[in-house]
Amino acid sequence: MKSVIIQNPIAQSTFIRKVIDNHGLIVFPTETVYGIGASIYDPIAIQSIFTTKGRPQDNPLIVHIAEQSQLDELVTEVNMYAKKLMAAFWPGPLTLVLPKSAKVPSIITANLPTVGVRMPKDPLARDVIRAAGVPLCAPSANLSGKPSGTDFKSVYEDFFGKVSIFIEGGIPEFGIESTVIDLTSQIPTILRPGAISAEEIEQVLGMVIVSSSQAENAPKAPGMKYQHYKPFGDVVILDGPTPKLIEFLRNLPDQDAVFMGANEVCGDLLELPINTFALGPQNQVDVIARALYRTLRTLDNLKVKTIYTHTFSKKGIGTALMNRLEKAASRTISL
Ligand code: TXA
Ligand code: MG
Image (cartoon, rainbow, N blue to C red; front, side, top):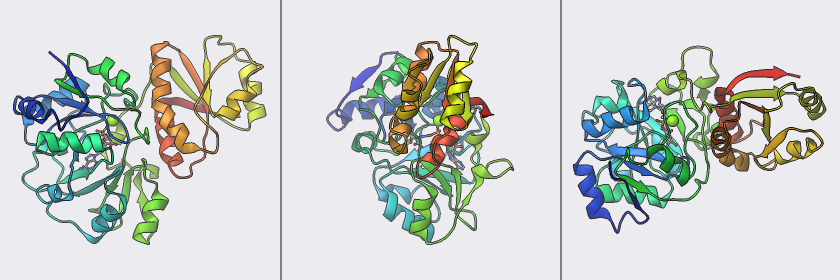
């Protein structure tokens, strides 16, 4: 398949519309991670998202809109919680799960009676939706089970020749996916922690919300049950103070292992023979979150077999960072 790279979606809107009419897929940047999108009214194109990614069919897709007016055709009810959250966080990395309208094909929602909708903050993302003339359903642009794509090179490598259009953007502001919040339950429930923290949401709603990802029972966001964010290498989280970490790594039999962590911790390991990959300053968890997937993909390309890391503060985006890290990891070792 021929793939075309576009920098300005509005200038190329005639071409984009033609691709959409021909069941084409578009890889585009957002402020969280890159997405691989199709018209929400085109079940053939939507099916090819699942096939191209190797994504399980029972994992629903998020619908992306460019204007708030596009929400009306997608959902049957916009409650007070939704109104407050849209006013505070849209455009931005918050996906609202609301009762779906009959217009939304069930292939998008995996037959659920709800649909997840968000309005991305990245102007390029909204421009491509405007150019397409329809909302775009889009999962993260990565092969299923792999770390999400957070730079153009990664998504280009994964999908060159498999999609019709790439919209070329930069490095996403957040680097971790949107927060998914269910507004159809009695108390708003976070189904997937993400770029907007529970604290920020609670402040806007003036109430304590529920986080189902921390609950023991089966999570309601179907995607959360799958092995996710898995790099090629085996990720091991070391949980303990830095001196213990140094001691553990000093006695490591595995010569090929690497360490990925905060700048300060990597600095403390300079005397050891292990290669280190610094993610950012320890107290800037947003910088660390932005670097996570990119670093995991770099380590993938290097075919690193074992990646040691440490735990991070769960403040703000730190909850989402630790959630993704724990999903990427095979185990945590308490030191
Ligand atoms: O930041 C993001 O959300 C990125 C960018 C591209 O927008 N997209 C993304 O999509 O992360 P994906 O497909 O990788 O993850 C979507 C998550 C899954 O965990 C899925 O189960 C959940 O959202 N989800 C979607 N619709 C849902 C619904 N109706 N009810 C419950 N969970 C839903
Ligand atoms: Mg994903």
